[in-house]
Structures are given as C-alpha cells and as structure tokens.
Amino acid sequence: MQRDSHTVVLLLRLLREAETSYVGTTALSEGLADIAGDDDVPEGWTQHHLEIMSDIGLVKPKHPGPVTSSTEWRLAWEGYNAVEDSGDDDEDDDTLDD
Image (tube, rainbow, N blue to C red; front, side, top):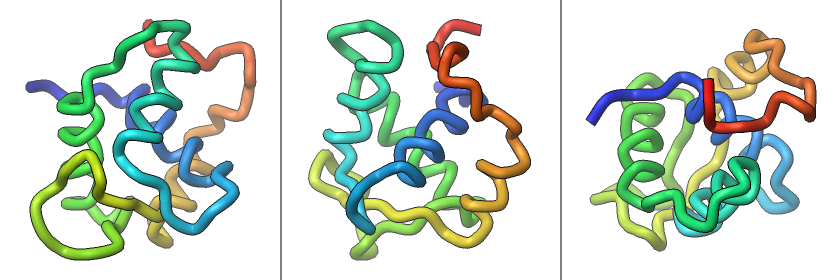
C-alpha cells in the first residue's frame, strides 16, 4: 500500500482540531470520509497511514501494540509542526483527491 501525503495532512488536521486529546482510528476514518464526501474510507487505509505517521514521530498511540480500529491517537510535537508547515489551512481544499 502506498502512502498519500494529502491523507497524512488531513489526519494531522483532524487530530489537531479534535475536542479530545486522543481520537480513535474509526473516528479518524469517519472524519476522512466526511471530508472526502465519501461514505467509506477503509480503516485499513487509515491504519496504514497512522502506522507510518507513528514511525516518523508525527502521532502517538495511547497504548503500544498493534493498530486496530479501537487504537486511540494523539498528535506528537512533530505532528503539530508538520500541520503548521503544511500551510494547508484552506477549508475549501479539504478533499482526498489530488
């Protein structure tokens, strides 16, 4: 499975804008679907991106272990920096299509 940088930016923004410190994988998949105007963003797609984001220190799981639909995530320090550096703060450009 390939990575998609736009998906990474959207996940970072969803975590930054969340009302709670941690957000579950399922809720993040639903958030991506809402942004895309699509009924279904596969959780496997979301999980894959969260895993690679975790590998490079952008996000942290609440508990270590395998990523599942119930894994909860928070932004790490580098994740906040990446959101700021992305310059992707235009609400009109929030789609999964490049």
